[in-house]
Image (cartoon, rainbow, N blue to C red; front, side):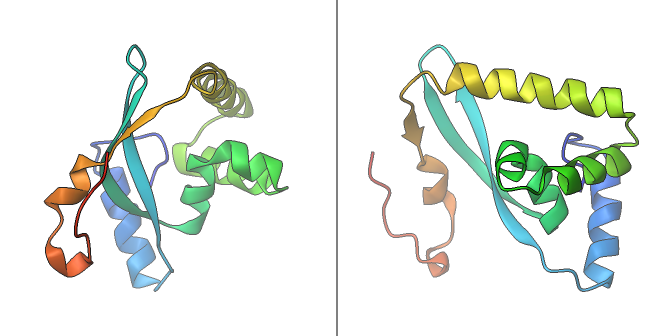
Length: 125
């Protein structure tokens, strides 16, 4: 699944390929941010291959010595030049640095929409 392309058919096609190869998928949380009120809202979960998950968490990948692998994957999946990859990472790190200055309130209301068989009983504020 493309780490940066949402709403296109490309991620669906890639996911089908990975499922055919019986690749293990990882669960990634999807968030919306209200940067004015400092509210981080869970809006869903998505299945990603381990390489795409490392791209989504590029800062962590860089800090644990796997950044080069995440960068290679980001470039390959998105068909980006090294300059495009670098620009994307720099923008993501700038955004992370700004957001990290604040204490964020979590909105986990989305979990209440899950069927009870997932074991979600209540969500505390």
